[in-house]
Image (cartoon, rainbow, N blue to C red; front, side):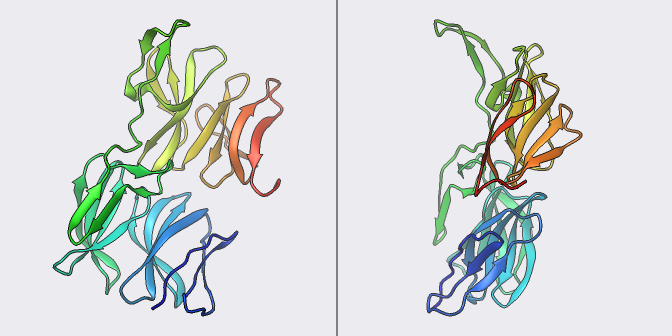
Length: 278
């Protein structure tokens, strides 16, 4: 029988038969920087993939016989796992926000049936941003790890002797915190609904404000005058925006990661994959 191999390429990936047949290109679609974790259905022709784009992440149905794809489940966090019960039914296990859900999957029609049901709250996730839930299933038995990445550990201030002097609530805390020059705000990321977004916490009020929306954003840094931020989008582009998220302007592509902003405001220090692309 044939097996499926997914090999990332600049413009997509391909599925290849293990018997040496010609590779079949499964191209990425516009605005889709990544897709992975393919798994064949019973017919050996159609397969499910995790598709991550600027508009969000979804589980899609693809085929070796056609370049067309269809969305099976949208608004997911990472790839889905398909499992079959001893009774012969198929289910998709996937994550929304922080919960593992199960929904019946009709393999013949390639669509889900009924409504999804929560199986595990606060499921563990592999990688950050997440690639898949930390779960396995076989013959009706489920094994999983709890503890997702959505909950942000509280930020704690300590003095020079190491004693705790202040603790922010989880709701006011962020990941990868970057302190502003005046020491009154913290820039960082929070995770929810499948996306990592940039937030700013006002330390005087102990409250956070979301800066970016509807697209994953990472590696936030302050401008020297603290009126703008720079960050890396899920598509790898370096972006500059105002503190209210308006006026976004792309300054570089294929960035990984974004490090710092020079004190004179003229330069942003970034890493580039595969050479500079203006």
